[in-house]
Image (cartoon, rainbow, N blue to C red; front, side):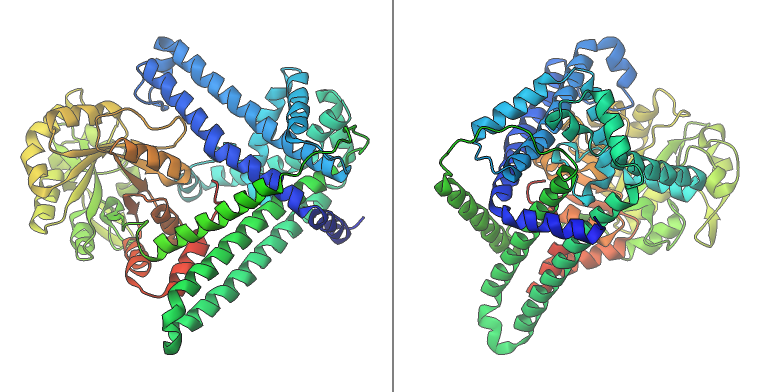
Length: 592
């Protein structure tokens, strides 16, 4: 069967049972978002709290393994539970859709028993395979095989930038690895259905899937790409029509009386269409997989009440929630403008990072803060510099800690077609204060820093930081705790390179989170602790919008003017059509 023929066949099957498919997917998403994810987060945070562990990071991994083995064991158990739930989620979808295809009228209790039978009937070693497989398909979730439970499993953007901008050969190897992973994921696509519906062992299922998909990798990839294209085109066309309609309403004077209610109606329709499209993509992906499995799986043919009243209430709640959100969104009741923070003091390459020249240029754009980096020199003074060595900007193979402040301030550095000298922190702080420009100072955790790095910094610059109204942040947990102890009036932020095990317990006032794995759940939990969250480093406008919609308190960016334009459009432009456009560009699954 050709790609388009297969797509049309499964498309017909989907719409034939659309209502039942929708019930299954909606209920699973609700359970995951409102029950399972909060429970997993509570378990992880509870384990850390009971074990007196303030945070989990690569910086303290060895210490936890050697000194807190029970905490490590507990967190491993949480990860195993996560794996079991991912397997249960996918199994429930497969069993439910196969039951619908077989015209079996199963109750939810029947579904639960079937999933439990498959979940606990498999050998324990099967879960190692499923961990591997779900990690394989996670990067390609846009093709319809995604799981909210594994939404954090991704490579942070700053690592990708480091690979492709500074270590291109490694970036090329990553692309090759992704191609290989995609190929393996397609060749293993029938393993789980074979184990569930044909009672095959793991080895036999892998062999069966490998043989069944031989020579058909491009065929399956083509089907999923057609699915992705169909959904993307549908969403693009329908949302464009509604936004154009709203634009006309916004511009025509005699329609001004209805511009707000029409904006709410049009936005609600966009949200519903987006949600239905998500259900369609998930359902079609499952049907495509099931099309290659045997359909002789036995289901009891029983009659059960359909509980239409339940689904009517659920549908009403979903629509009302969308309308309520839209009303608050268009009235600016839900969102607040985030702080604008210039990363390393530059805006779109207008100068050399962490220099007084770029500080002067960027401060004219009036960011709320300029973020910059501080390291200790050989003579125990402080210099404004980011990298651990001078190789990148000065072509000198030395660390700042191996040179005196006088030597460093005479070093020429080059970037963005400009040349200048390294700045001392004394001069940088004095210039910023004179410009009435507040600083976000990063205390760099580098090997050259002395044990008294924080105490020396606090003693020397405490008054100057207070006068500047500066904040301090760092990747080193102890640096932040010591700064807060020594300078209690200075706001501090603990930097997190990824979001995995919930909100750390710290005396800091905020968290600076790498934006790739930052989600609204982390922000909500941080806000419950009365702590702010700053997203780092957000350079794309759609990502900026996403961080704003998640209620980030501040955004650190290399493109300050772009961020300011987005904030102006979102909070100061009265055009409802523009607000709708911004929402659409960052719109995701409502239950993520």
